[in-house]
Length: 172
Length: 115
Image (cartoon, rainbow over all chains, first blue to last red; front, side, top):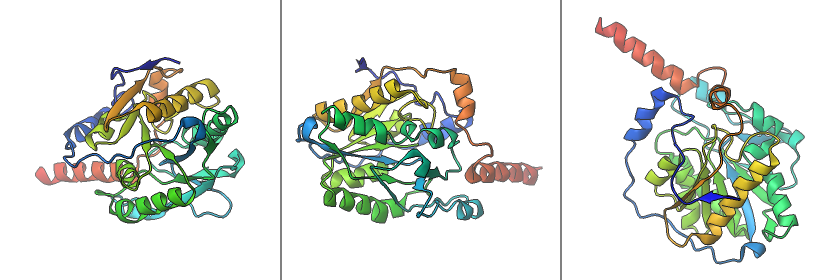
């Protein structure tokens, strides 16, 4: 596997051109970066996933509230869905008004690679997959206040309760 | 998503953000950033492409294990396996999202009012 240590990815390659000025104008935050040392050997680590692709369990979980978003276009559902590690593709559904979800409904691993994570646990690359993974819907109102004060702390608390050593986040 | 990364990392859980917009993750000063030049909704690759999904996930884990300083960015040396122009069309929803439709309407209204 080849990794590039130079910055080669064009962040705007797949973004509609009309949106680019908005992202370019976004300010650089001046807060100090948060940092937690990863001091567990990878082969012993319990690793979890967090996706913002709007994934939920078709049986037993509420879809993300896109009807309210249609009524209030500046609002996005800030709530959390918990996805068990033994989930199967047929149990997955998704609601997201900003991306086409067809591919992840055919193969969740494009956005939440649970199968790949389990394979890496099987070959000893990681210690174990987390018993649960986390799903949110990525369009949020400006400031993402609920994510900052409720959803984020809820995910963090669940990670600690599940003895998760690291979390891989994937914005949709 | 950078908001969540920050809260979770501050609680003591190390995070890696796998993103097609690494420049935005950097603006929010995310701890560890893996840039991928993939269409939105496909942070780990395309459907059924086990090798690419695994390459991306392994790169995220390598970054987790190797980064020693905050705001470390690595870009995945992989290109989208399909036609990027088609992928650009395919990732987008069939209908404009509510905020995009709302913004377009506001622009039209402003133009009408200015006449």
